[in-house]
Figure 1 (spheres, one colour):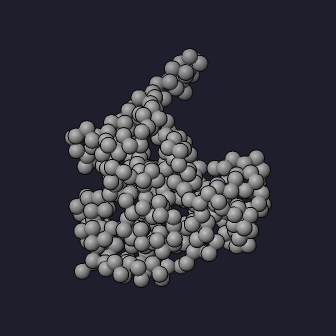
Figure 2: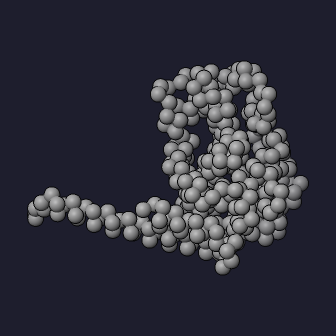
Length: 61
Length: 280
């Protein structure tokens, strides 16, 4: 079993967290696409969708 | 062949288990300013089953009390009458439909969506200066018409769910196509039967069909809370659909984007503990 020194462990943990965050973000975007699958193209239709995309991508990071 | 006559809905509602008289009184008092708190407290305390359910909710982690309460009076002293009234009505209303099962209807996503809408409605109500507990109870019950349809018209509702799955349409569209009646109309009939305050009846009735102008504040809150709850995907229903909301209705709410984003976060934060408290 290979031994990692503390800085390497920290780096790996950080990369693992970043991968997880990216996977979670991707999952959220796919779910939004599914939940809003009947949404139209007008600004009216997309207000909540755009807000949710912002919430799931920018605000939650 | 699966159409439902409105008269049959009224008959089925009268066949439902009746709510305890004290719950009817509590519901009717939700929009009253001059409530006799002492009398209502005594009435809740006299109903042992209701007291037990209410105290279980009050002692759940959701309310974060430093120590367990053993009486309704103690719960009111700590949480306030409005909160305890909301707890008592919630416990009674969920209990009325506790045994609802159906081959094509999973009750867990139903209650998860109801709780998400209730929590969101309460958050919106705080910002719009309307009664948060009334908003919470209305949010919890906004889809109650579905439970009437599921429990009282099982074959008809099964056909509705099959239609929805085959056409990937909204539940409302499926109900109108198959049953010629929708759960919002049935919900209105039930909330009238239970003598809910008028504003709550209207909010249940129009949570899918808003009037763009001149909507009552509670109706607007429930309409928006329902859409937000769907969009936050809290029910975990894989086939869920977010209903459309016109921009004018968001403008009527008068909340900026920052506030709405904070509300989304607060709803997600409170949701799981609210489900645990209600045993969902």
